[in-house]
Image: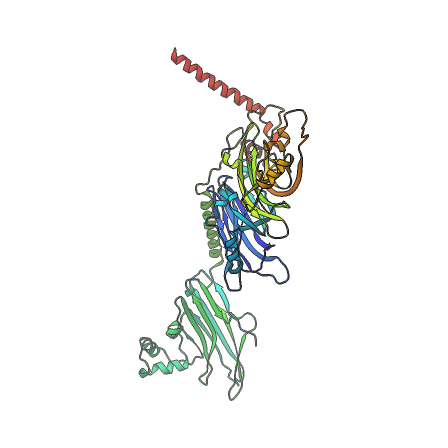
Length: 175
Length: 439
């Protein structure tokens, strides 16, 4: 059995059209994997920067995983929301990143997108906010007719991730 | 006077072990015989003050159960003239009582019917949190100023005099706790996870973690990317559905002309190196991308082709920025067709884009007009797994040298050939036995 430590942070968000952003995240992995310790999901605070475009979260992640196979390598799935002045939260993007497969420190950029509605939906969205959301965002990874889903590019969420491998070499894995 | 502040202690031990000693001393205004008193309080220990003593001694004042209890206790006590006393949880008004809290006030009766609060302690039995105001006295004692006929100043100290665990017991306890924690971690790790999936002998597993990140500078603002992996001989993929696929359709609205996909894919390939002959070079698989644009009338047009040879020979994380080209349609009809109907997959075989499509001595692309378009960003993580590396790891576990994949795999050519001979022998033997049976 091999172990993987994922230590790092959700560093910041940039290029989003508005500020006051927060992010929900969770770690997804296959059947081979098991969480030994650490929090598998979380939510950052709401942030708006006054002087620059970046929204800094610096939200810590510290996860210890054990696995009996490489398949189902862990991914982080995030949802970015915008909190408006009325206290309503609007979906601003879905995103996935794969935990890097080499040991060491990595700066990983997560490109986020959100569903792009019909003309009518966009008209309503312009005045009222909100907009279409996915019922099962996980299907994006597993499904195959993804091109039928229209999305629009939103922003980039940056992660700093340190990965520590343990006992992988013992099972003939080169990383 | 020093600012007093609330402190919070967390203690898994029993609160009944807590003992607090108060030492009060009159420093100014005491005359020849200054007041000095020391009192040790256990948790929720009731010590009566002067006023309470007189009050509860009179039977007429005692109505409730608690008051009667206090009356009985005071009657038993001998006459004493103490300054320090306590209010315990039972003395609290019903309103102030919290569900999980127990509270205790340590007080001083400094004459003139002035009961002064020296220290308040609150304990949450669920969270095991002890809250104190003020904290135990560090170096400077606390002062009390009493304004009256004559100005009086008192100093007092709050000390923790709980019986400490002997140092060897503490060490032992820590050791046991460490062992329990270690054991729990081990249990978690061990639970059905002793084994690890290892590919069969003479097979190399290559795990590709492909991420299609973004596409930029394409003509049309709504695009998706489809990919296809071409496997050369000796390679195979258990889940062949993962060998081709596409991203969601993404559009950009900002001026940067970048479409975001951020799609992670996991592809597991297997290479059979039993068949490899000495001196033969491993043929890596290639991946082909096609960027397709979709307009508002759902017309699809091919916007770009790109390919790379997958970096299967060395594990790591690879970032690529691939420049795309598209094949221009032939003549005016082709262009009109592209404009009005759309052209999608307008090539015979996408393998054309790479060198492996050429089967002659030279790669000849004469007469094909192409146009450079945008770029796509790809990240590929590669992990390799093989039993060969297992032996490699065992043989020099201290300093693992980085060897090239072929070197690692080729070390076992002799072993492989012996294994082949043994396997062939087994087959022959079985056939012989079967043949004999029929005779």
